[in-house]
Length: 326
Image (cartoon, rainbow, N blue to C red; front, side, top):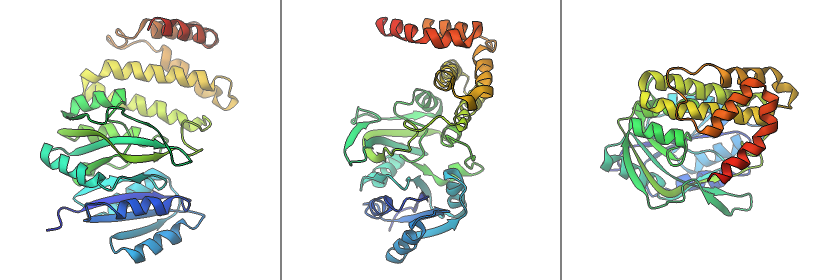
């Protein structure tokens, strides 16, 4: 018996430089009963041709070609077309350990979980591992949905990323990704809300390539405001469905707004959006949200309320004081 079918979805856009290594790592999985869906999202390079060539080499590979619509759109098309009992995602410039899906599936079955997650290694342009998302590679745990949401807020182990996970296919029933920036942020908490159990192993089996165009290196375009909206939407969802998560989610939301305000304050294209950030930061607190906000964070929020420029000027001093406080 080959075991249940895993659909592996790979959005592809102008990725000819990396695609061979990515697809090879999926084809080399020790768990072989795979449906590998390559979605050419309107590439202008040879990515589409490579996808077709890979499909001729391996009958497990299915190619979908579409007009450019973004990562979320490519994943949605594949979700509509897939046949798997389980589904995973790999980005076209990344690659995975040969045992990743075997181990993730085994943990799902043993732990009776609907989502299985693993650790991530960060890889430089030179191919060297520069760090790990979770330095504790030996940790393993299984939690319920509420605790997993708290993990998601902290972002240390269970993260918003779609790609270092395996999901039961039916968890996507009625859910598709939005065409927004940080689309994984807008999706992951909804998936976790539908899962009774989420399991995690710190073993790093997903290799994330740190390209020059990654979020951490890119310019803060106005699309980053989707990050704020997504975090705000998640907070509203927690208010209704996971009240225990609200205080920390609120603090993270306000902190994100202040961080982006600091970065974008002098950018002309952010002028109107900065007004929105200020409005969100200074909005009256609901119930007791923010009561456990750190003293420095409360001071920063008050400075924004007095005048955003004052907050900008004094933030370095407050950060220095915060570091001295330990």
